[in-house]
Image (cartoon, rainbow, N blue to C red; front, side):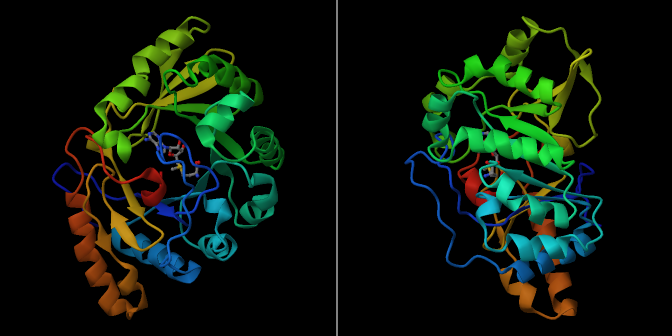
Length: 322
Ligand code: SAM
């Protein structure tokens, strides 16, 4: 097992199945051009092999499939069926929900029992402005069908000053009523926001500001979360739970156990570091050559982690896998 001086190790793998996305969210893609799949994306088999090797060498226990938008990938079905056979404690998926109804059978067949759906507003006009793609009602219907099929749902919302703050309580109510756990994600200094302090500061909403807003309607108390969890979780008595992923207000780098693999075969040990390590070529090598080489790259990737706090990253979330 590879462990750093702070006692951190890789336990959670996030794999970006494709860089392609059917949205072009304002905070993710500033020019509004939807991302297409990279030319040299790994095959489903190579990705599955990467996961297998990473389980063996790094001790990965949990896998989250993300993107881009994972449900647009033609590799989804083949990859999912292979992952379903692996020894993982937990497999989940992050999606914008646009294709959820259509792809539900694939997820169910692969044994997926929980997903995160990104949804920044319940207002159709604001949805069009922020996501710049897709249809709000299709997402809501998809979530309802997934829940009816027994899938647990967390909803990810990025609160943005001037764009969807009026939706904080609306989304919270919507989620509490349906048993979805709402997660507010503090805006992160990724991509263009890493270099544009003003744009970031104008839109950023902190944990404290969110709690003040929520406190006007509901009493809440902090509740337990896993030791390496990214979210601070709160219980609203008699109603349900919500969480805040507070990258800025309550940094969690000290206990970070995440490793990311891009769709083109690059390992990222930290969202805040521009370092990345290519493993695509290792996946065709015999096991006895691939595993030691992978081990060396993992040591480097673990060394890329920040000691305390996230300080921004030039990479766009869609490329690296949110
Ligand atoms: N397409 C999928 C989706 O929409 O969930 C998966 C990829 S998306 C990049 C994953 C998550 O990253 C989304 O919840 C999105 O809101 C979030 N995200 C992207 N850029 C972000 C930023 N700068 N700050 C905070 N969250 C961000």
